[in-house]
Image (cartoon, rainbow, N blue to C red; front, side):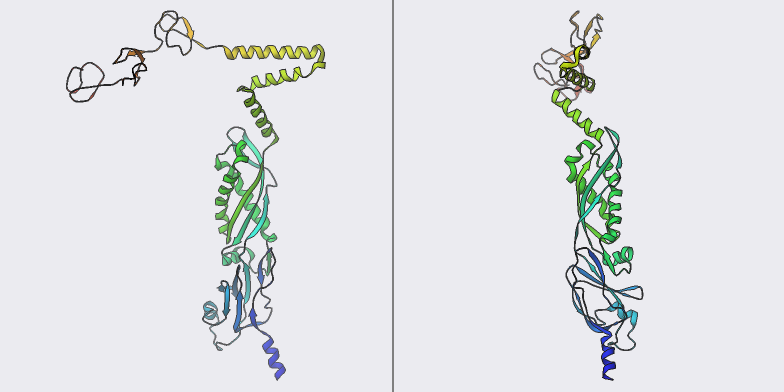
Length: 362
């Protein structure tokens, strides 16, 4: 009889805890097997853990970090489910899942295939990106329902591909909505990462996770874009803002660096030099317009015609010093007087010699 009681007692679990520490383990199911948990058993939930009790497929109770003696007061949901019609000290069966709530760091992500986006300057561009992120479980019940179900041993590798897909899938929208030119991506990695973290947080919340860190380590651009950036930098260094002029200068430089090219090389050099000369001459040409008084050709932007001396724009005399001013000028460029008359009687603006409101002569 004593052996039978000892056997029965050995079937009752009196201590429930998770002491094993593995950096990538997210969920641990307490090995209940066919044993029953004794009412009054000790439950220890360590910091960075949550204990979830499942009874017949239903979430019975959730315990935050701390030490508990399992009683009807500490297990209100289980008490309601079981009714305890055989007494408060009766054992019960339940699955116990410990969920790690620590941060899982150094989770790598990267684009397996280029991400297509539209850039204002280069049009459609394919880019690649990579980085790291960190997350933690902030809703163990939602995580249980949406992801791990009743899996007894759940590790980060089981969900890493899924999370990577969420991250990469949001990149196209992130880069397009940022309105940052692709040429400026590398100087705005922190800003893009902050925007990415905000954008991804909603998707992580839906499965019970909190995205604690999101880093973009590198964004690689297509080779043709990199070449265009190099050429633009060279144009800036040479003080050239015309691409055709830049290419001509480049051709002249290459021809000059080829002393062994013979007559053919010399011909290329002379031809490129002549083309450059023509282009520079065209650039130095000043556009001309016709004087509206004598129809003579005058440089564009001239205020007076060099042939007839007439003003090329409508002028009006300054109300103070009489110097000619462009029409609708607010102040005189000679004396600084404000070009607006007011009536001395009613202070109304006056454009002529008499006030249109009171008739006073101005």
